[in-house]
Structure formats: C-alpha cells, structure tokens
Length: 68
Image (cartoon, rainbow, N blue to C red; front, side, top):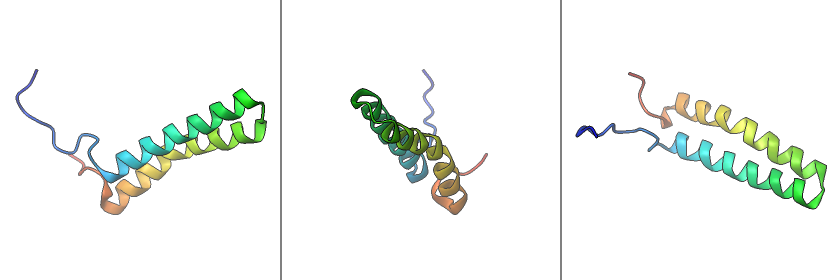
C-alpha cells in the first residue's frame, strides 16, 4: 500500500450526496419491485439515474474535489 493519502478521494459533499441518492434510489426501486408497484420502481430508478448528475452539479459548484 502507498504511504501517501489522496485527500478528497470521495470525501466531499458532492460524492457523499451522489452515493446517498443512488443507494436511496436502489432501495426505493427494489421495494417497488418486491411489492409489485411499478410506479415506485420507476421513481427509484429515476433517483438512481439522476444521482451522478447531482454529484457533478455539486462538484461544479465547488463542493467536490479539485481537478488535477
């Protein structure tokens, strides 16, 4: 393992928000599939698909790691 520590590797509000939204989307979508509610499955899938867009937008607003 390297002795250097990459500051900001996933430790930003943008990254945490994107991951949180993706997990919530998959949980909602999975629940919709299990209980047989297609609308809930679609909403969960939409949340999961939008999560990287939200992360990129937050990163562009300065809440992400600086580009190298």
